Image (cartoon, rainbow, N blue to C red; front, side):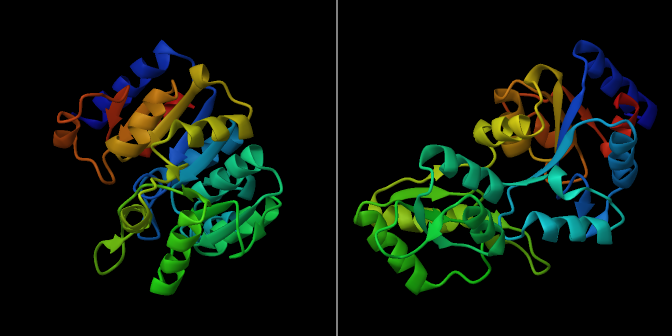
Length: 271
C-alpha cells in the first residue's frame, strides 16, 4: 500500500464519523526510544493549531505528567502537561471516585505516588484500604511480601496496567502484570487493572477533555491494548505500523481497527 493509498484509507474512515477529538498512545506512535517518529511533531502541532481536544495516553505509571512532557519536548514534540494521561492518573481518579480520601500501600514510582497524593490519598502500610501496584524498576521482595500480607488482611488489590513486560535498551523487563501475577498466586486475589485495555482508562480520558466517543478517535500501535480498548469504548481506531503490531499480525486478531496506516503522519489530513 502506498502512502497515498494509506492517506485515502484514513480519509475514508474519517468520513464515516466526524472526528473532533483525538486520543493517542505515546511509545510506538509518537516516539521510539526517545526519538520522535516521522510526522509525530507535526501531528501534535496541527492538533494545537486547530484547537482540537486531545490526550496522549500511556500505561507507563513510572513518570509524572511533567516528566513525560519533558521527555516529549526533548524529542521535539510539544505537548502541554494537561494533555498527558497516564495509567497512574487514571488509577488515582478511579480510586478518588470509589473511596474519596482513602489510603493505599503503593508499590511504584513518583508517577503513581504523586497522582495518589494529589487525589487526596494517604500512603501507608498500616491497614490501607487498597494495595496499589504500578511500574517500578526496583521491585523489592520485602515490598511484595508486605503487599501480600496486606491483601490477605483485607486490603483491595488494584494495579495500574496488565502489561507483563516493558521495553528497555537491553531487552524486555518484567512489568506490572508479571508482578501482579506473583501476588495473585500468593493471595488468590486478582487485581483490578485500570489501564489499557480496560475501557475505564478511555472513559476517564474522554471525561477529562469533555469528549464524546462518537466523535473521538484512538491511535495506537498495539492491537491487544490500544485498539481493542478503543473499539470497546466506541471510538474510531487507527493502528500505526511504527510500533508493536505488524501488518501481518493484524489478521490474527478477531477484531479490526477502523484503518491501518503506516504512521501517525498519515492522519494529519484528518485533523
